[in-house]
Amino acid sequence: MTSRHFLSLLDFSSDELLALITNAIDVKQRLKQGVLHTPLQGKVLAMIFEKSSTRTRVSFEAGMSQLGGHSMFLSDRDIHLGRGEPIEDSARVISSMVDGIIIRTFGHERVLALAAHSSAPVINGLSDLLHPCQLLADMQTWFELRGSIEGATVAWIGDGNNMCHSYINAAIRFGFNLNIGCPQNHAPDSSIIDSARGRVKIFHTAAEAARHAHLLVTDVWASMGQEQEQDERLKIFSEFQVSAELMALADADALFMHCLPAHRGEEVTASVLDGEQSVVWQEAENRLHAQKALLEALLG
Image (cartoon, rainbow, N blue to C red; front, side, top):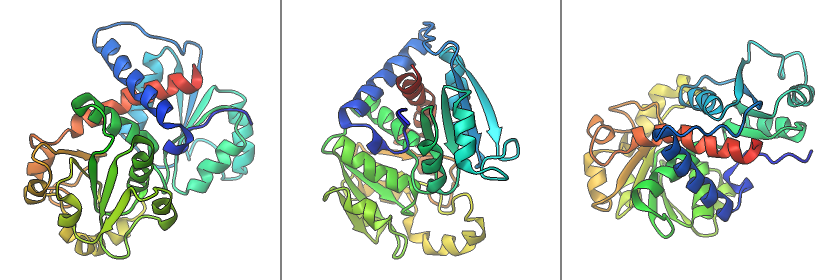
């Protein structure tokens, strides 16, 4: 297949990602100014959701509409993807009828299989391994507020999960240093760490990771599919909460980000999430603008 996919940040070069962020900021300004921008008229985006979502669904659906296109929401109850029909067959059929596909699912192998047999661009809206679309929004937010992130220090606090993996990829592409503060046995995938060529350091206390950082980021301690581990994870991660005391160890001008939904009183205190250093609402809104830039690049 010849289509360009976005399954990971590493599918785009550093220059391509910087251009994407620049366009996302421009797309946002045009929308705020009421300037009509509809380069995807007549285009159709299939949105396959095997995991529930708020921000991913709303941002992609609104984004396609604002760009002049159309989107169709397909839950795992609506189609036969991998359920009565091989994912490879579904990929061939769906991609023959639409101009792009976004999938939000569990195992990353499902994203890879869909892309391998799709004649249309496939976007990873989230898998258990990676969440690249969120990083586009996070980087756009940083660029809007601080300019280039090259050479800065980012602290990831919590589980070495899909968001953490995408932050490692972002460190590679955007040139920042990443401190990961996580409990023993909850570090990110070692092969993903190894790919970062020394840009990543692992710490097993939150304080060590946060010290002098310019950006602190966290995520929920129990992701979708891990609900049965909630009580155990509350104990394991109890020393990895982002609090005012932890923020005080970071750079005085440090920002706080969270991909949401957030659990106040667990991975982050309410005073931090709703405080002056938090940019989570701007970050959430930027899912719309960053993904519009991505859709325009892949489908335009």
